[in-house]
Image (cartoon, rainbow, N blue to C red; front, side, top):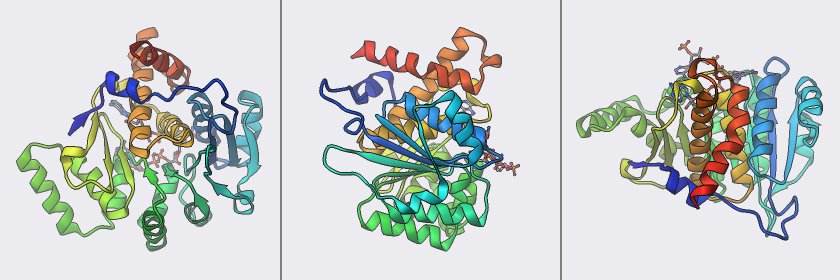
Length: 305
Ligand SMILES: NC(=O)C1=CN([C@@H]2O[C@H](COP(=O)(O)OP(=O)(O)OC[C@H]3O[C@@H](n4cnc5c(N)ncnc54)[C@H](OP(=O)(O)O)[C@@H]3O)[C@@H](O)[C@H]2O)[C@@H](O)CC1
Ligand SMILES: Nc1ncnc2c1ncn2[C@@H]1O[C@H](COP(=O)(O)OP(=O)(O)O)[C@@H](O)[C@H]1O
């Protein structure tokens, strides 16, 4: 396994060009935020806006859009149904990416939306939150396979509970054998689980937790799995995963390689948690504090360059 260090993260940080415009900096679209989980949509959009994409567009509920008009008026809001009417493709000099699922409840409507996003997007897609339940269905797995064959990157960001539901769709003997192998080698089971999911579905899997593991579907062994160990339990708060999804989505939209975008996003998110804790107290850090400290985490990396 390879640890993500601040030096590695600093090298990945994409700068701006003097002649950049909002489109060359990347378009990040987010299909997020049900009426009940409107806040998750807001957090993901605010993080995406902070992490450098030039244009952020949300396909979202009335409730999320109403909040965004107040706290992030630069975000262009559309109803979720409008996603199918538009083209979602990266082209030369104009990268883009789509985040789907943060703040989705598990429902048939959410499943249909996730499948639309996977099938219609000719650019990287990140699936998070309630959107991940779709991947544990035959249609979801087949949509991921089609994207993999077409060379279209997909990133997924499950927490332990979401990863277990995805793993439950795989061959149990294979999962058990893989865990036994990693126990023998002294490698954490979560590293192998991330690799297993990545290979089975042809995705980059970011398995979140106290330590976070990043595995690529093209990798052969756990030696290539990236691990982040410098987080803080201050991040164990509702909504920090939505902030991470928006952050990585924005880096994908800037045109970064998917595994690099995940490594940098996970590092900056963890560092924002640590800086927020240093500014107040670990116990008192809020998800909004983590969001507010993203620029400080980026600035600390900038100084290392
Ligand atoms: N402000 C907002 O609008 C917010 C909205 N949010 C949005 O809510 C949606 C639902 O996401 P969620 O993860 O909250 O689903 P939730 O039903 O708790 O989990 C399902 C089950 O999984 C398990 N489980 C969970 N975490 C685990 C862990 N770390 N490690 C191990 N197991 C874990 C646990 O199962 P159990 O252990 O109880 O069997 C739990 O019952 C999603 O779209 C998200 O974006 C949230 O981001 C919060 C802020
Ligand atoms: N004990 C911990 N130490 C370090 N990081 C943690 C810890 N607990 C949670 N995190 C991080 O916080 C985030 C939580 O994400 P997630 O479980 O999806 O929450 P939510 O769905 O409420 O947004 C992840 O990035 C995870 O790695």
